[in-house]
Length: 390
Ligand code: PMP
Image 1 (cartoon, rainbow, N blue to C red):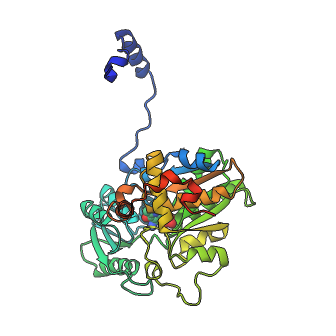
Image 2: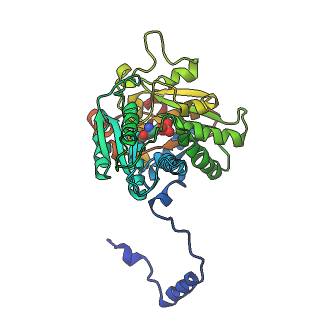
Image 3: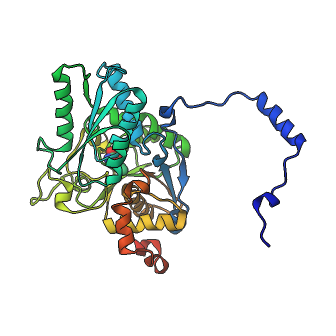
């Protein structure tokens, strides 16, 4: 027998309604965020049920894709960079100042959003091999986007160096266009301190400090350094908490953590990640040591290398089993979280980060997943076999 929901739910009586209204009238006003900036941070931490069941360990995810401005942990960083620049007099609201940044996307989206909210212009330099969702979104947010050919960091044409040059040019021009501010997410300490002051403390509070491992990839390194610093400061520097880097193919960070050197003799520091291995993972993995990575490098205890195929299988698994639809860096994090969890005693608690939504990655990462049709494999494999974890 078909029954609509309205037929099942008991109607609210007039008496109930009056009582409810009276109880609300006397209640204190709840806190209401001030603008979109007020929706940054305090993201939920939740248990990924399927991964926890499959591993016998508790795998917890910090839902950073729910940050309310640009939908990634970069909201925290962008806000901190802007506030610090304002305090230092490098940016002044309402003067037509422009924020310049070199970014593969997420930071640009956060900066462009906050630039709108605070009365600035945004100028974003990004490599032209990133998914078009991100550059399209930047356009709609009103940012000027300069898409450049991928180049090594030693080149003046590298997207980060170009953003610095553009900022300098604007300030030097001295015209009415306002100042140019180079946000510099890779080298500026405003990046990791945002995570040290917000993401780290939130994770500590949300878990009551009961964590055995924290697993994260690194682009700028801001997230892993800032979170590791806070957690290790509060949990003791001993063996209590293991911090693990999740690293995609082509990145030199895995070698740096495991063996102390980034490259074998055939590879060169500063070469682009995609020059070495063509990978569809965006936002993490890098072939140089940034200030933000260096800030927390000694706090990282181990590293896990994750292949594109493992990341794609994980992304598919998460959407099928849990309805969680994420981008590539989140999937890499989850693979490394499972590998880490399986190396720890049963019942251990592992925390990782879900950086951004799969909707940012429809045309590359998710298209590829669709093309190679991973669905069928799930039926025949347990998680470790599926991911080819030894
Ligand atoms: N995931 C995505 C989607 C990103 O854009 C970034 C930043 N480039 C990261 C993860 C890595 O974060 P971090 O820069 O703090 O290392």
